[in-house]
Length: 244
Image 1 (spheres, rainbow, N blue to C red):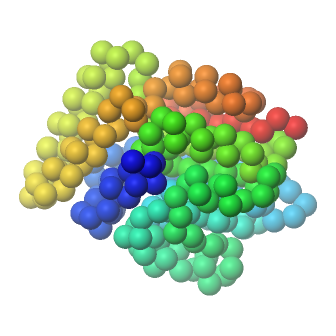
Image 2 (cartoon, rainbow, N blue to C red):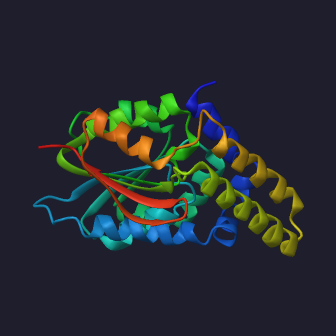
């Protein structure tokens, strides 16, 4: 199964249709989207408009943060799930009409491989990379490095598993309790089932993205200045640049 197919499986159906409920079971998610936008907003001004690529735009939560933070940003946002992308078209209509945003239905790796080398000042993502198989994710990171301009920024707000396995297990147990409490309160046991299945995928051996190995992989690929700029539990903001 390809990484593209796996992403489609995870976000098709009920989860994609009711993705706005993510903020209920994971309040850290919208905050992380805001932080991704703020990090790009703080990137030094460029003589020309800032060329940005967003991987996995979903319904447009992080896209709004990115576009609101910089008037000079011209953003290409990609997602492989039509259910999510249709919501993004509605949520982001203002920026689409302005011509500051383009949306594409494509998986992350396919979208990256279609871009010329050194074509983006910034590549950004939130809660996308952890959904990929390890091998697919490594290919995505390799392509991110290729499409960034020398000195360009990669910023990823995502689910990075704790390196301490026991501590991480306790964290996941807490997440499951939150899922039962919040979806039980809403009477949405159908969504509870789907999110538990989704979490099981996140935690599977061929998906789980632990922090230390993930940072080491980025350095091995050639990223420079790899850093964790913010972290609460499994939610971390990771940045890196393509060397000049």
